[in-house]
Length: 92
Length: 217
Image 1 (cartoon, chains in turn purple, red):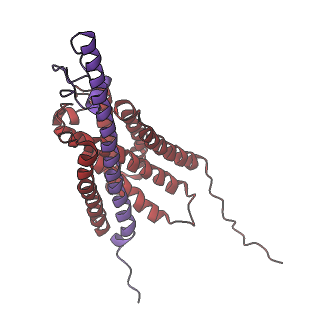
Image 2 (cartoon, each protein chain N blue to C red; image 1 turned 60 degrees about the horizontal axis):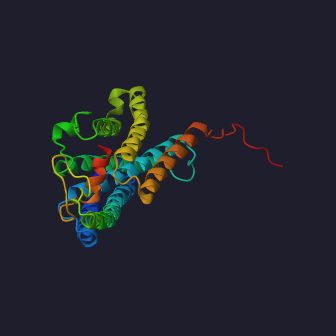
Image 3 (tube, one colour; image 1 turned 60 degrees about the vertical axis):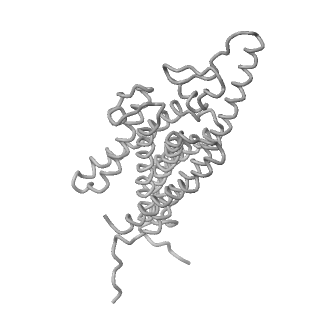
């Protein structure tokens, strides 16, 4: 007589595949977000350098380059926060 | 808890660990993001969670509509629906908890756990918290549906549609990546999958089997 397969084992492979795909999606997003972060950071620093150079040429004090957390003010590219953080302050 | 779930949890955890092991050096390679890992992990987990929950809802609505009968068994769709839901919920939790380690947004446990208590974007953050609770409720009640009754279970389960709407609004409005084309693609793909599956669920009528066998000759 054929023994009935335990109910718990049904579609275990499907569950594993679905969970693995979700984990893989997380990894892919992590890479994509980090790559986006690289471009944004580079752009922010470039923009900052440009603005600082413009301010120097005008003889004025360099302006704040990117928005920074409350209570702090970045005045040089070295102090500039990466754009993801700056973007968050945009929404606040 | 059945053995399939243990395997699924192990696979999901392994996938996340693999994502971290592979993604971490790549983050350094691409972005030099030391110090921002928590923020990156939170964003990635939020987006992956959104996709998983959208897929879960789409599979659930498809299963419920019976349009796939004959192609794939409902029991199989149910297993996939649940696994995607649990994985999406785990990622949503990771999305929230990662913020505890982010230095900028200044979230602590009470501001994450209590809706609208956060100092950073209180409305939208609170919407995210509520969404997480609704998804957790809809997922958890699956295992106690006999105890609570099908009627209440179905009602709770339906709130996951509202929760998905909340997740969409939360992601689009608070997400710092919303301006990026591929992120907009993620949001649109998830929303389109859910909307399409719900449209099928509401409009599809299963053809009735004829009671009388066709007469030949």
